[in-house]
Length: 381
Image 1: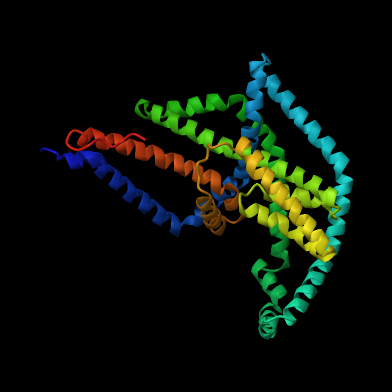
Image 2: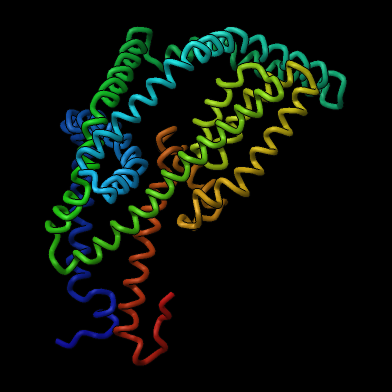
């Protein structure tokens, strides 16, 4: 039986095998949705293992270039890893010991005074609204907030399932954090030591026909995700350092605490800086309008330096993702997976983009194979 060119183009018999496979996967998902409780232990194991693995991979992308450099300097890879980990551990320990008292004092003071800052800012905004055109709507808004949020505490307790369950949830979170902190250095060590061997081992598990494609995909994913993680960490650290210097110059209270908050939140592109500046705005607004103006100048200067000097030199042009796409990805990933989605949304999108680009490249090659002789070849771009 002769097969048409179109059937060959879309896969021929392989297409039917693929459809059968998709049907079997759908049946498996349906069965799983009805007996998912059986897999609860497996889900618990994965939820325990995945956090330290993610942290280890982030550290791997940051430290692997340094380990490679040490290896080029004729330092054995294992000794280079040990020296690097011990050096970073000692450096972080020294920084923590030197800065912990000041940070602890500022955090306690900020936590104690922040409600006062909020109430003072709210009183100022309320006074401004009552003397503006928004005054008629203020009473309606106040009544809505009072009626809907008066029993907020009881609603939160109901959603937590009671105090006992809430304590259990907190204990589970603390346990997972401790497990992640304790286990991730060991995972990191073996990633740095045997990362390339593990990649080669995984490629050997695939049929020889697909190894080149898989190797190309893994390389492109490694470049995209690695450049993003390295770039965002370095950029966020630079933003935190620049803001700390700026806050010290203008005399803003809680300078180091606010700078650390800015550095942490700046890991999330575009949305992070907006979150980072919010507590500083509240503190500066309560202090004085002049302090708010100084804060605006510092923030504008930091954003100028970051946008024109830091990011272009650190991030480069490896991501090739439009800013609007980044914002949409962050919103969707955050809505689906919460804070984890916000943090990992862009690397996940980069991986999906690499897969899509590769599949489209294969599609163009297939088109040229079956239709290029009759029509114009699909241009290789």
